[in-house]
Length: 232
Image 1 (cartoon, rainbow, N blue to C red):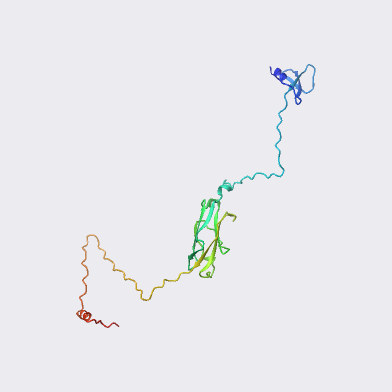
Image 2: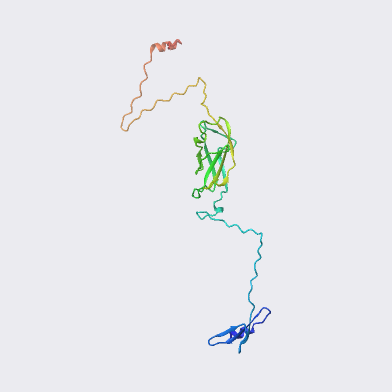
């Protein structure tokens, strides 16, 4: 039955002719005619057309996962900015030590080895920070403090473990000012503090208030006459 179906297939220009001969246990196929062989026409061979390839086409970029298995797109920062000091603001720091606060979205990924590096007036601080709030170390200024009431520029960036910049924040400029003591007028006198109240223990009887000292009769007489005692 299969042989009849094969013979019934239509022949074409691309068809192949095969001869079949009955063998001892199974038919024998050959492309050359043998005595007693029957001709068979096979259907055309399925051919897949090749896909054209452009020589100048660049290969598609494949994201390379890092050591933790995350791709570079998964660890990108959408925003990073300096919150404090404010741009065009001022910072009171007599010892030139001031706090810096930044904001990153998403949060700083410490597991990937990311950190924050800052520079003041183009000079790197030389220390990495792993918190959104930190203090400029005193070692940055050295032995001499910067001049008072001068404008400073602060730059900050998120870097990876190799020091490559991942996200740069917009720089801010501020005035580092010194604060002097509060000047009060010479006639200012602080108010006296009230005496502390006596502590009464449980079960203890309240103590009577202390009696006022007896008035000096001479002091009362001087007061009526508008006089006063001489004070050294």
